[in-house]
Length: 291
Length: 313
Ligand SMILES: Cc1cc2nc3c(=O)[nH]c(=O)nc-3n(C[C@H](O)[C@H](O)[C@H](O)COP(=O)(O)OP(=O)(O)OC[C@H]3O[C@@H](n4cnc5c(N)ncnc54)[C@H](O)[C@@H]3O)c2cc1C
Ligand SMILES: Cc1cc2nc3c(=O)[nH]c(=O)nc-3n(C[C@H](O)[C@H](O)[C@H](O)COP(=O)(O)O)c2cc1C
Ligand code: FES
Image 1 (cartoon, rainbow over the protein chains, first blue to last red):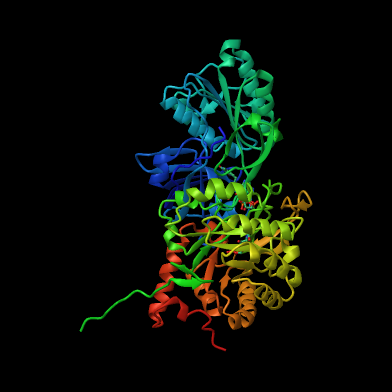
Image 2: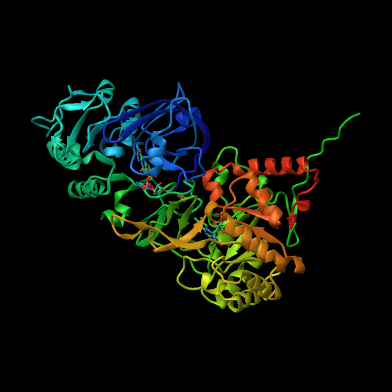
């Protein structure tokens, strides 16, 4: 898992096909970017120019691709100047975009049960991973957490999940329709959601599995740091490997500047690895920060 | 009557080297030359040279994150010269680079005169065609800008490296230095074959919620359009000395468009460095080459060198 990704990266003039603003400064953007849509793998991201001004681009995960239509979907939160500028882009505008970038999740063994834990704007790569797994006959389960209203249509789930009880009933409609079991968590008292942090919801589920099933699980996660810490702890507690998708400030996103590093410990040796091409996905066990 | 349309010649010569275009990709912005070629449409043939990330005798881990941060019209970086060591680069990386597509130059760093001399000796027996001396890195505790800010020390570094290699030496000058022309004069006397003007300016940024510096190293080097006026002025000052000695300047600092390139050339840049501009647009090189050719045609010039230093007073 430490080899960097060497796939071809495309510079596309991506036309905005749809741009929907949701509560909590969350936006979903659909872009026409056929080469990225064709090649992207779950966990990869695009490096997108947020306006015509000369400026650094912003890294945003790919949430979903439609290779036939040549489109990709992004979900982002407006937090600072760059993402606010992105929020101003109108349907029909074109944005320069590099993609697909980064080392994807290792989803190679579909006989595994992949347990996907996403928080906030860390949900997008989980959606993509679940979609990819189900299409290849895998058995993904998604747990998504948010402190603001989810930017998706929700509905009651028809899938029963072990360890999940009470009022934790809602799921993301599009996942349900694809046959992907999912439950939601929030501390904001959202209806139909587990009251608490999403890793605790995932823990209830994992403890509800019999030991053999649990041993067959792999955790995938993306989201805020405290959440990733909790997921890494969960993996250690239950002896389940975890793949974490990290964020760091980026300049080139090509591997050229070494600006985006995270410390790793591999075979006793400390190193700084580049989040853009050696990651963004890393096995939790090589990240001292999450030990 | 037929009109002969010949494209202007944008090749240039620099410290005895023939560059296929005046564009040079700058140290620290393109790793060890192996990354950007993955971008569809990127071509090494659009550039005269690629300067590899700075190396030291021993490997360096570099600074703690955050290492980069965007600022108005530019960015701060404090990478801390992360590199696998000069020997590794020569043995493992240089043999794999496409030397037929463009030239690769080294960027030499050290904490002592002995270090700089050793790096020069190592690269002497390697396929790099020139060695840039980084005496202006603001992001390391020892060496770096501490050498560059002192004209005598800067000259000593050049003098220590000069006997170790027959390859052209290009000394990278710091804008943080009070008298760049004096430093230029002294490193020319010490035997430099070219000058890189300018490296980054030192700056910082503060996270107001945490009340802490954003950059892990506290300070970082400021690059990008914000420093372009400084770069032009420093090139202008340096050229007053370097032109007398026939020493070429690799102009750099905030060049991000074709018009910027022309401005640098008029001010006196024999070659044109691109760093931060690549982050904004990784396919910028081909566009700048086109803009240069169009400008030369429009102004009745047949070659890039006619533009260099054509500033009217
Ligand atoms: C691989 C990857 C995937 C990402 N995917 C998503 C996503 O799907 N949806 C989403 O909403 N956000 C995502 N992010 C985070 C997103 O890139 C930042 O929110 C964004 O860069 C902030 O820019 P800003 O100008 O609005 O904020 P500012 O805080 O004003 O940004 C200032 C500088 O810091 C950088 N920066 C600040 N926060 C982050 C951060 N968390 N990560 C990286 N750089 C940061 C900015 O790029 C900019 O250079 C991802 C980050 C990475 C590295
Ligand atoms: C991320 C980054 C890393 C850099 N690393 C080096 C380096 O290793 N050696 C060096 O001499 N200059 C280094 N520089 C300075 C650049 O080579 C260049 O001189 C400077 O950025 C100004 O040009 P620009 O505005 O076009 O980027 C670095 C700059 C950046 C942005
Ligand atoms: S952002 Fe430049 S190496 Fe990752």
